[in-house]
Length: 157
Image (tube, rainbow, N blue to C red; front, side):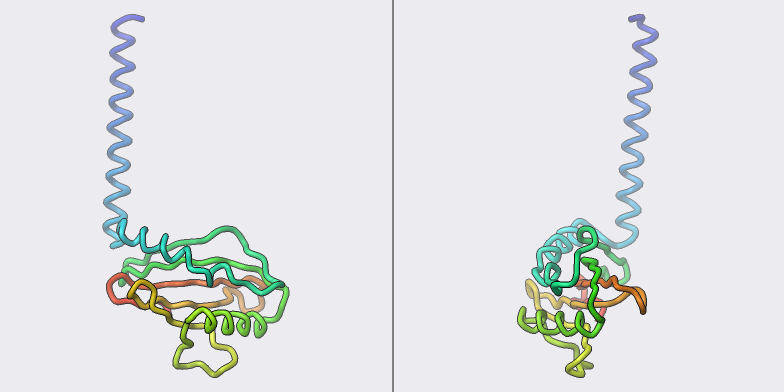
């Protein structure tokens, strides 16, 4: 190979590497600008192991894997699991009410004993909220989310 060809290949590789480094730096900057950090990622990983996210009525099937989000306002970390149920909403909520209470979750103060869908539990010394919600009023899909703020504790309930 000629020296000029080698020089061109080296220049392209160095330029491509510099572009990659710049892209990684930009992504890291944008992530830190949003207020979510590696600590948030570790916290999300610990929330993803909570057994309540695996609990489901017999007539429900999981829809994909766990989702995870971090919201910069209050650094709220949310981990969720989506399900599709062939049963009525009231049965789904009743199932999660019983499962949550058996797992040590406390119902929200608005608990009417029937259709509560928000609970709180201390996990690793931090308040974590559990919510069960239906994205579409008439749909069969629902989400089970756990959320907490690294700065204040508690999440979306």
